[in-house]
Image 1 (cartoon, rainbow, N blue to C red):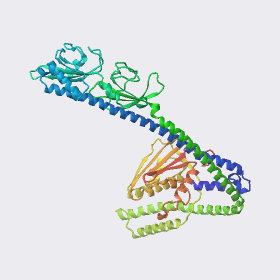
Image 2 (cartoon, helix red, strand yellow):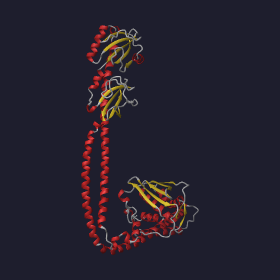
Image 3 (tube, rainbow, N blue to C red):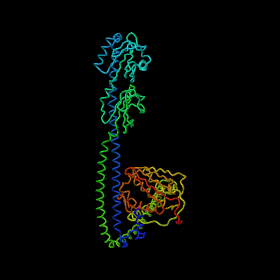
Image 4 (cartoon, rainbow, N blue to C red):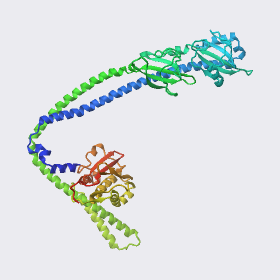
Length: 578
C-alpha cells in the first residue's frame, strides 16, 4: 500500500493532490469547519451510541430483575402451600396407619382426633370415615354429613384409584368452597376405608401473608384456569380467569399479561404445585417494578448533555489551535518543497534497486533447488554417473547462489515491475507450478498444504510470471509465519462478484497484530529483523496485484492465523495490451 501511495504522489498533478506545494492559498475557514464537524461527529456519535446501549441494557436489566423478584416470590409462596398440604396429608396418613378402624368409627374418639389434629397442625375443618361404597359412616365437624354418599364424586374415585388425593376447591354437600384431603387405608381385618379431612380458608390465610406491595396479587388456580383462592384482580373463588396457562413445568416461570380494565401490564410468575391440582400465580405491575429505571433515565440524559457540551468545547479549542499551527506551517512550506522532491527521487531510485534484487532472488532460489536436486540424484541414484567433477560443479553453483543471495539481501528498497504479457491461465495450474519449488520445504517443515480449487473455476487472463510471483511471495510469507514446528496451509479459490476470482491463502501461524496490519504492505516494514527480512515481499506483491488490476486484502488474529485474499479480474480492463 505504501508503494501504491508513493507512485500516485509522484505521477499525479501536484496542483490537485497537494495544492499548498504550488503556492495556492488554502481555505483555512473551510478546513476549520470540516475539522470541527467531522471530529465532533466522530466523537459525539460513539457517546450517543454507547449511551443508547447503556439505556437499553439498563432497561433490560431492570426488567430481568423485576422478573427475577417475581419468580422468587412465587418460588417461596408455592413451597409454603406445598408444605402446608403435605403436612396435613402426612398427619392423616399417620392417623390412618396407627389407629384401629374401631376407634376411627367411634364418633367421640374421631372428634377427639379432630381436636388433637387442629391443636397440633391447625387448618382442619372436619374429618370423616367413608367406607368403600362411598358412604360416610362417621363424621366429626360442624356439618351434618353422616350418611352422605360420595361414590359419584370425582375425589372419591381418584382416592380409591391412587390411595392419596388432594382435591380442587369445590362446593360439595355443604355448599361452601373447600378442599378435600383423602387417604385410602386397609384395616387389620381387611376392610377398606377412606379417611377424609377438609380445609376451607386456611390456604387463603397462607397466601394473605405473602408480600403484596406495589399492587401485587397472589392466588391459586387449577389447571383449567379456575380460581381456587380469591384474587384482587380476577375476582372470587371458582371464577375463571381470562389467562391461558402455559404448559406444565417443574420450574417457576414468568411471562407478561394484561389484566382486564387495567392500563398497566403485569409480570406473572407461575408454578405448578407437585402432587396437587393447583397452580400458584403471582402478579406484579411492570410499571411499578421498573420505576427506578425511569428515574435513572433522567440522570442519564443530564450526564449525556453535559458530556456532549464538554466534548464540543474541547473540539472547538483543539481545532482552532491546530488550524493556527497549520497556518504557520503553510508559511514555511516553500523551504521544504525542494527537500521533499529530492527525497522522493532518491526513494524512487532505491525502490528500483531493491525491486531488481528481489526479482533476482526468485530465480536464485530455483537454481539452488535444482542444483540441490541434481546433487541428490548423483549421490543416491545408482544409474547416475559418479563423476567427482559433477559434484564439484554443483557445489560451485550452490556457493555462487549463496553469495548472490547475500549480496541481494543488502539492497533495501524496491520498485515497480513492467512488461506485462497477458494470457489465459488456470489458477490451479499456476499454483501447482509454484508448489513444485516449495514442496520439499513444506515436507521438511511438516507443513500440511490443503488445496480446495474446483475444476470448474474459470481461467483468468493474466501475466504468468507475475501471478507466479504473487503466489510464491504469499506462500513463502505463510511458511515464515508458521515457523519450523509444522502447520497447516489452506488455499481456496471461488468466483467473486463483479467478474473477479477470489484466491484465499490461510495459515495457522503466529498471526499479525492489529497495529502491524496497517503497515504490512509498506516498503521496508518487516517483523523478521532477526532473520534479515527486508520488508519487500508483501510490498512487491501489493504492486504486482495492482498492476494486474486486482485487489489484495488481509485478515489476521495473533496466535490464530492469517488469511490473504487476492481478487483478480477474469478479463483485463479495456485498453491493456497483450
